[in-house]
Image: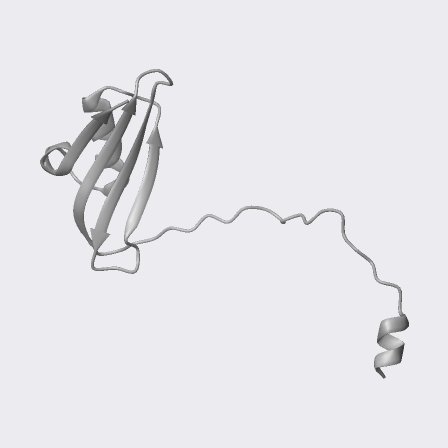
Amino acid sequence: MSDRVLSQPSTTLDKLEAQGQYQVQLSLKLTVLSIDAAIDRTDNISEVNVRTMGSALEEMEFKFPTTEFTGVEKAIAQELGLSPNDIRKLIRYRLD
């Protein structure tokens, strides 16, 4: 039987194509431990790391096209479903 399998010509695929994209809506209960935002004024972008506990999801990363503190806080608040005031209590900024 192995002779027949080895003697068959093998075919290779040049590309692997995925069919469509899938959108998933998640609802998680977790505690935000810290928020670190790196503000890059040269590229006009902010990269944000959110560390959490209480879920298998331990860290989230976001990129926002703003470098203004209030804009970053507002964007994070919208993503996490928190108030900008709550975000201000947890966030630390680093200017690059």
